[in-house]
Image (tube, rainbow, N blue to C red; front, side, top):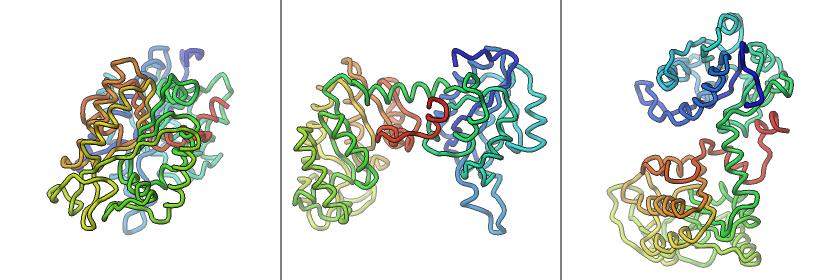
Length: 401
């Protein structure tokens, strides 16, 4: 963006305002909107006008009973107040993203003003990456800036196709997009060692591509969450009623064998906080993770695992954290995730580079007020996961080649 003169230009900016709302349609987490503000400000300060576009939810998958779009539930208008407040200036709103109304609103926009277009996913052409739809979006502006890393893994019209209609000198990443790629690349290319990856979540199948990629990158891989029990069972452990993907046991064994062959240390939880039901009020115990009783299920890592994992984290120079250590949404099973978050913050204070990527990990550090105590917190869950897996993100390639 620093190479573009925005003076008297209209700039189409793809942001990711797919944010959570409460039942009264109020924004409950403004992280993604706040993250877009520096890019918007840079354009406004440079004498440009900003036209924002974003998706919001999946409106075409959840139509009203009569087959119509539920506009009240999926309108981006709900984000307008938060956007205006964060910018410190009122933003305008257009009830469509293409067509005469959008064209008139864009044409009337003056330097220093911001226009938010309606949800791009109200049009089926968005997810189809339709060129005609993308051309109509592009026709609203002189410059295109993609600042929606969270959507960069989708080859949609507003994230990828639209870039075709702008000359190389008139398209760029925004500051958020640049920061996401830069920080992820710091883990992928020439990291300071030892590099430790902390991987959690429910299923091995969701993370196996990342785990395979990490065998080429990491010195240590810490595994928690429900996925750990598939790996423990693959080693012959008894896991009771803990989550297990029985059809992935061979995959799990293969991964562990490859890690051993490469000299990558894989750490599984030695003990677990187990419960007799998937409930906040369930009875709980601490049991060895490979000897869990038949009527119990592991829902968090235990005290021995917390201590062992923290020790690995604290002697690391580069850290990647993707996924919680347990069912952290329930207080009774949140301590493992909290412990890892605190250890990452402590390691950062001691000079380590720490990248937190993935929705639940981000939610955990935000919940604990530790977001400012790690090096970088990614806004892109699926996009960050695919980038770390080594995939080419269409939204990145459309700008950077």
